[in-house]
Length: 273
Image 1 (cartoon, rainbow, N blue to C red):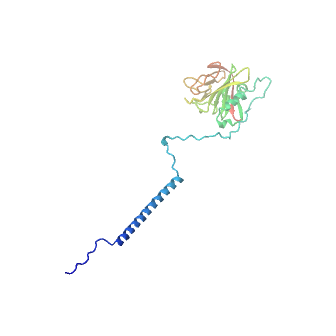
Image 2 (cartoon, rainbow, N blue to C red; image 1 turned 120 degrees about the vertical axis):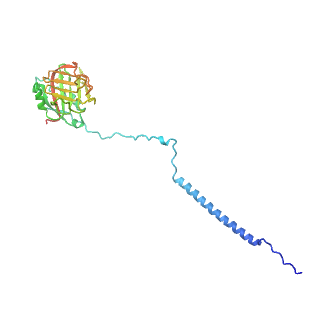
């Protein structure tokens, strides 16, 4: 019988298996090395970003955080000081004249500080009407004033000096009040035995607009509830001053609500116009 052929193994040759195994292992190592390198690059980049751009610290109450207000400093630039007032329109001082006017420079300077800034700049006040110079005539007073802003001055028989500031000319107003909140009442009293004075001012309260009311029989400032802040008759003989809503003032005269008049003056804030 013929001899049977020699049998072949079904497994690959040892050399081929070793070659394939080595190739697979090297491929896997290369892939693993590439992946690991990319991860290390990303980690390094992230660390560098955090190193150069640190995240701000977190606030536990960021929504309610309040910034402190800015610190403001006073400006070193101050407005120039006002020059002392000078009076115009006064009569020549004579031996028979006890004083040149009812309004003194000291009281005028106090009133000046309460005027609107545009009027404070006027360095001259002009006497437009004086009871001593121009006689007892309300019509004469009206005719002499003209336009402008004025300080009305009254002196009672107790030597009290008081009055009003009118931001418009004093004139008959046909039963209508006029003027603005720039108006105010004032009073000054001496403090003997010194030459010092006590000065009080009563600005506009905002309660009503009854600033100035005049006709051919009286001049008045302030009103409401049946009271005048200051009222004088056309003969410049008697006057009334009561607490009124317009200025919330106290009675201006030390004699009470009613007083007797010794003198009246009206001054224009500014030079003769």
